[in-house]
Image (cartoon, rainbow, N blue to C red; front, side, top):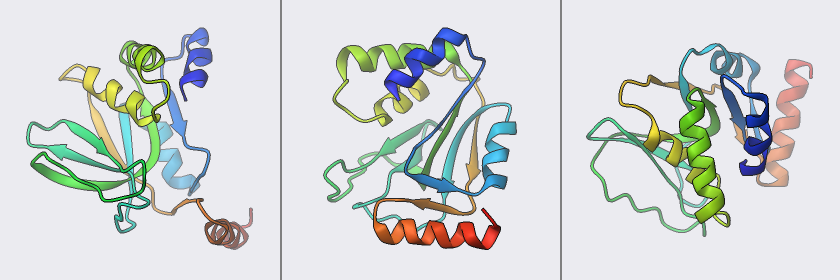
Length: 161
């Protein structure tokens, strides 16, 4: 993500969508992300298990925070929260200054960490009046196993892809 953003900024984009490469999502849901006129955080309806989920939650101050277990162990959340969601790992960024600053900080301090550091840094830098919307991804698979890939291929056959 870091290196892709470095190149993307050369084109002076108004917005950037980052869609993780091992995720499969339905086209209609993705089109909603594309059409949104705001920063977008996506979620899916799969059960949350700490060994495979990336979650985000809305804290009592209204801000969003990501949580995950990089060793796929137990997940611990210290903050009180309003809601918790299973991230669909697709994001739309509309504030290029916040995204560039987060990406730069990642390159300087966190290069060996995950792309969630960039996402969280972006959210932390957004002005309070910046609109953030949540979009559900109706059909979603994170392709971590051969079984996941087989499920994706079956879904593609059903929809004629």
